[in-house]
Amino acid sequence: MDRNRQQIWFVLAKLQIGGIERNSLKLIQQCLRWGIDVRIILVERKGELLEEVPSQVPITCLGHPFKFAFPYRLAKQIRSQKPACIVSAFDDVNIMVIAAKALAKSDTPVLLSNHNSFSVAKSESKGLERAKYFLLKYALPWAFKHAKSIVAVSNGMTYDLSRSLNIPAHLINVIYNPIIDTAFSYRAQLPSVHSVSKQTILFVGRLVPQKNVPNLLNACAIIKKRQTVDLIIAGDGPLRSQIEDQVTKMGLADSVRTVGTVINPLPLMAASGVLVLPSKFEGLGNALVEALACGTQVVSTDCPHGPAEILKNGKYGQLVPVDDPEALANAIERALSRKFRVEPNILRQRAAEFSVEKATRRYLELAGYDISTLPSPEQADPQTHPAGD
Image (tube, rainbow, N blue to C red; front, side, top):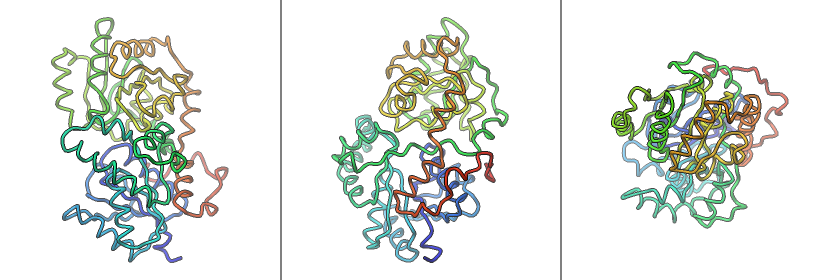
């Protein structure tokens, strides 16, 4: 095969800070370690993570001008360059990739991944977003039918996708998110950009309705009646100003720090007392796995679909009902007071199951790449710190 035929393409909407984007970059970095050529195709050349793309990885933006022309431009690229395979994420991007494959009349294998609960996201949508999900309900099954492989990031997601879109469950493959890489410990040991202690409560994530940060604030207001509260909200998003207003109105300004985006939140996780995920729904819950890998106690809502799977129904961290601030407050207090505690080494062992190498190997296998050419897991050097990490 020529060099382009060996190339694997990762197609994304953009490279903002988010779980899907971070996961894709980790897959890309692992491919590079194995000597596999990769390329990033974006709908929009936007996002903070553009700076984290390795210099040897070409980035092509095909959504400007006029995003609707993206499938046509991608089809042209597929015809002329014939990639080895294409890996795609996000519902609307998945549809555009399959449309491009059809327009190109190409046999290039395409792997489509799904990272969030379709049924819950649909039920939570409003206005134009609701109309979008109405269309997706019919367009996504068509796209999945023409993909080489379909990936869900948890077993719960497989059930949700199968039930919501009438796709046979046996056609969906579960690959946990690629979270723990060879440089994880190194990054976790770097200095924290904010002061924290073992009494600090930490939230890391985008400030969007799905993450349900107001529920966490309500829980902290309850805790404050009994003890001092130190909450850090690390993340940004459309609800940031609303959340900051709520902090002021609730009298929590001296207890809550909204610090915006933190490029490397691992030192914060490692030094905090408990990481809290108050979400209404998740595909998996990357922040939980990262906190476990730091040996940090976690509390999560028992939302669909990932947290209970990660935490083995409460074995590795506490699970509480969604939208129950009293239960959330009680669980946080148990973690901070060590009334509920899992040994850090046990938490790290659980997190190791979400390795980047394992996920990348499986993605490549499903996309039709010849994984027999890859180094065996025994050959990997766990002490390696990739350049730029």
